[in-house]
Image 1: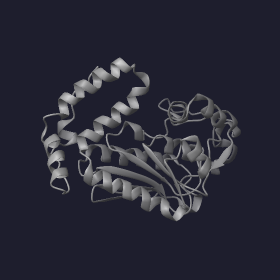
Image 2: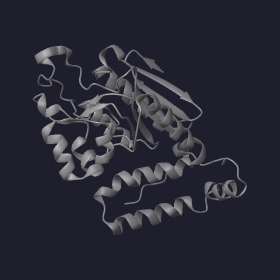
Image 3: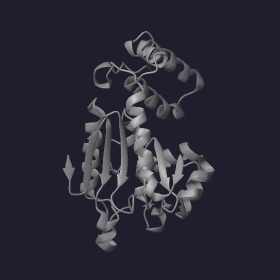
Image 4: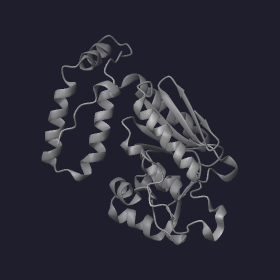
Length: 269
């Protein structure tokens, strides 16, 4: 799969998705959003994809919305189907782990897209910011939900209401970045994590854990216990539960047999 605004490469269970407008610092376009949604849907449906890495071409991750339209950039939407989500589905809705390799600047929508991912590896020298309130609009792509979940309401208010910019080290201190590295090391580190997931984790186990993790913020402890119990009944006694133990005892790579597309359970209420 290749698009003028996005590149897709799948190898050894890892899908690498590259925002590809390097001449514009990967400024986000409608075409890019459509292509990213298509890539995400493909990854979710394809059992060959075990983990996903999202990054940007060149020196930036994503400079945010393309401001090339000048004062008309944020004109009122005429399409009744308009959504501030930017991409459908969002990364957190996928059943595969999504790692944002934030190799450079991530501004506005560039950062709110990364917030949808499960892990974020961030360049130390990257400039980051949810700057929309400084452009006369407002944060998007579920930022009012993802950011408070990551860093709490008070810290989220600092970023969402001021639109200030900050760098990689502060992103780690705030809890946005899982790891901060020199820019040249960001993508290799993200790919290493993705390859480890692809080999050593059970596909269905990861998919179930991811969904429950993102859902948990709206649940009580008792509801989480009920869902964990119901879902344990799905994975315990399965071929993968036996294989995981045997592979560890025999000191070899596991051979997983359950598949997300085939074995996804009915989700407990």
